[in-house]
Image: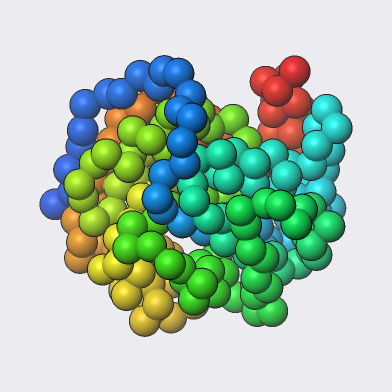
Length: 217
């Protein structure tokens, strides 16, 4: 999902809403009764090698994002593609791993694969290179009663994105080459302000990786 300023989002989604800023606080103990689709199928073309398996302080980027999602959600549906990630998931994990053989067609194709294993009416969509998101952001978003909720921090939208069964239906019927944000426009997505820069601090380049490593340590 492209990163943009609020003004750009307003032009793209003129009827969407925007919430008050939420300051993330303490972690929560119980998991939300929601699934989380974790997208990890990309080829990391700008990085030059698979970022999912890059290790930071003893854990791969994928494992870190998986553990974050598992901490917050009842089940994680991870979608692999360019890189095999089976060795990163343990038998005791509350997670399943699916493969998108056509991952190069776009991120929406991987999301559609994940939707096939969805069990809950409301769910999150999360990206495997976002390892600094605060768990309390998941819990805050889950309280909001909108069909689609994007978190925003400092004008930057990010993930996790909260969706419902209406969003799932639209995404399942859409062409893989489309962008999820465009597909979801008819549902008037809500933009919730959060005090969590981790929602947009992804890893696409070596500079991103260096910055991320400093934040983890």
